[in-house]
Image 1 (spheres, rainbow, N blue to C red):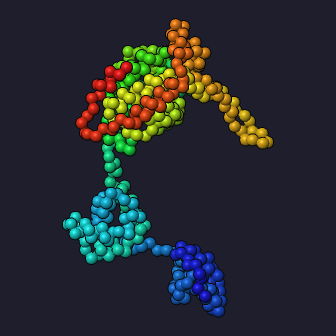
Image 2 (image 1 turned 90 degrees about the horizontal axis):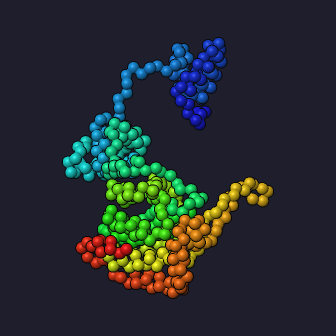
Image 3 (image 1 turned 135 degrees about the vertical axis):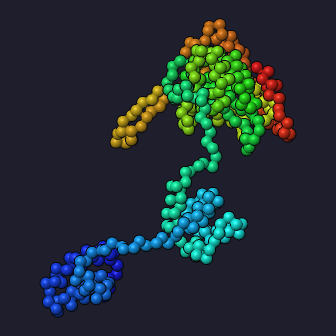
Amino acid sequence: MATTEKMTIDEVYKYLRQMRCRYEQANRTQKGELLTEMEAVTGRHRKSLIRLLQGTPARRPRQRQRQRTYQNDFDQILKALYECYGHICAERLHPNLPALAEQLAGHGEVVLTQKLRQQLATVSLSTVSDHLRRIRQDEPWTPRRKARNPNPFLQDIPMCRLPWDISQPGFFEVDLVHHCGQSARGEYVHTLQMIDVCSGWSERTALLGRSFKVMEAGFQRILKRLPFPICGLHPDNGSEFFNHHMLRFWEDHPHVQISRSRPYHKNDNRFVEQKNSSLVRSYTGDIRLDTVDQTIALERLYRNLWLFNNCFQPSLRLISKERLSQDDTRPARIRRRYSAHTAWDRLCEAGVLPAEQQSLLQAHIDATNPRSLSTKIHTLCDQLYDLPPKLSEAPENVYETLSES
């Protein structure tokens, strides 16, 4: 009875080499029994086994090399299909080889013979994969779109992550919020937001576009109304922050340390990223803002939010971290403690404000009705929503927004 699992050629020869000694020492009757057994094990004919046992059961080298089934003309057709149809993988290309080849042949791009048609219809997926691997190996890969050149102004700017326990106010995380709606086409409004890591003090200003003119004007507005000096700025790697004009602008402020976050690490700016939602999106939503009137209305809203968020609205700030070891009831964990104070209270505790400036701002805070201010903020939001969007392709006059200070 034949075996259920077929032996390989090497296994057959190894088995016959082991049986050869028993076969040579056996008598006529025993040789017949051994041949019957070997015939059942190997699945070979009796006469073939006798010839192998009389000689040396070993594989002989091939006298003539076998010709390739798929020649260079097949590789040329496959390469043309691979390049023409977007360098798709073998799994997508294999089932459609005959149809795609006929389509190219109909336009005179390739020449199909009857032999090539048969090979394209019967070739296996593994063979197509092997041939495509050789094609990709021989041809250098070129990207579909040329990669952007790296920003040369980032080379001298250190990458870091501002520590959460900075005790000195003045180190700001900076980000730009886009108000483009569903489409990033054309010029639209941005919000430049800065968050102080120590106190949680927040600054926002509305910009129409991202040119160096509006970026410079936005930083100047923030510097003008900020009650304490800036010690450091920590934006992301956007070219709107790092270019020749902006670096020249900050050279006039040598006391400001410039750093940047690591590429593709948004958590390096975790404080400002968090406030993008609670202090910007919660008021403006996701609508598109792209006119001068909308920019001025948004800047008017931010002026009122400046006093409300910094002086009346408490915010949570992390004050301590404690690592707790594992016990019988709980795994190892970190216990975090927070303080709920306004940014103004933290600035007063830090003692960074001049006495005269602190007393003037405190008097302004005492004279302000928080409820009336909150009502005015909601009214300004409604006025912003009621403004019509841009209806024409004519560019807006950005200089009309720069005068808003």
